[in-house]
Structure formats: C-alpha cells, structure tokens
Length: 127
Image 1 (cartoon, helix red, strand yellow):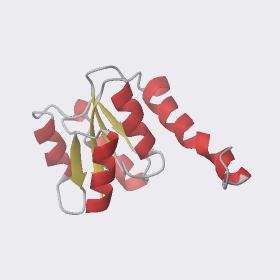
Image 2 (tube, helix red, strand yellow):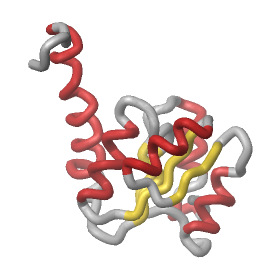
Image 3 (cartoon, rainbow, N blue to C red):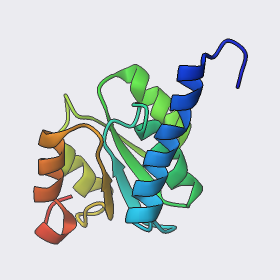
C-alpha cells in the first residue's frame, strides 16, 4: 500500500480493474484487432478498460465530456475520442469503423446509455 493512501482507497483500487477485466475478458472475450467503444473513458472503470483493451491489441474509441478528459484518454491509448455533448456518438463510431460499428461496447454510465447501446448494437445496425 503506497504511503498516504488509506485502507479504504487501497481496498477499492482493485475493483475498477476487476470490473473492466471481467467485462472485456470474461464476458466479451476481447481479441486483438477488435474495436471497442468505452463510454466515459476518463472515469474510474473506463480509464482502466481503455488500457486493458489496448494491451490486448484492440482499437479503442471513447466518449468524454471535456478537452481535459480527451487529453487524458488519448494519453491512455484511445484512438477515437468523442465528445458526447458536441457530437453524435453513433455517427462518430460509424465513421470510425467505416460504417460497421464497434465490436464491443463497454458502458458503466447507466440505463440511458446502456439502452442506447443495445438499440444501436452491430446486430441491430447501430454502433
């Protein structure tokens, strides 16, 4: 445990990694060369998901809400950065993937984004 980090913070740190790992590896079986859209890439779980996906050789797009967050996720390896407040996320993902949509959509934002992700999944002609 690093100096200056309390027990609560140290105990919580692995949870973001476990969450991202289980979703991308355990559930999605993410593979090299696949495309991943990570909603809220600058968030606690999102920033780890970006790094894991890149480590496994996936291409990563992510949504952010500010210029500072865009710079942060770019430094983590995100290839396509979408400001969801100023851009149409579906259109941006389609443009990035040549109209095919993302192979995997990783969402920890909540019900509205989750529902939009389901409605716009590649199997229903979306992401």
